[in-house]
Length: 161
Image 1 (cartoon, rainbow, N blue to C red):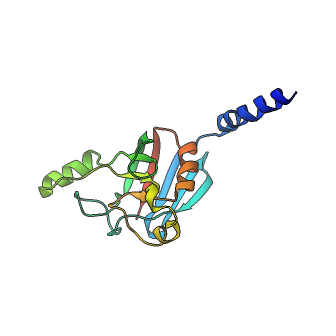
Image 2: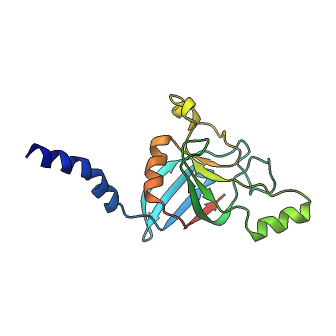
Image 3: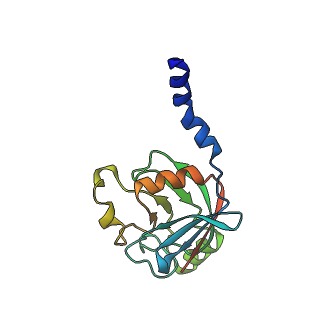
């Protein structure tokens, strides 16, 4: 009997993760510092998020420390990111590349939703109070675990000013 209970306890996380229904849309409001995970047009989870050092306006070029605005796709995951886990945002799209080409600049890339570096543990409260990324969307590592479980790729993401 003890072995049966042990086996059930060991398998419980597998059943729990299988029961998690993925979201079908992610929405970010930069001016509110808010990200919402949505399933069937209902908000499932909301998170306080931070951005790059220069968050106002749409990302135009590499190094401007802005987060893009518009409709993109969360298109792949990196479990071994230099930050705690990351989910890639499909910036730049064709319009972003064309704008950068007209301006004679690189549009940049590698825009992600991610947690914080492991060596920054204990600084979460501070890091969630300032914009510190290079244009990514940052959350706590605990929140990144939730997001990781709820967001499958590909999933659309709308980023508003």
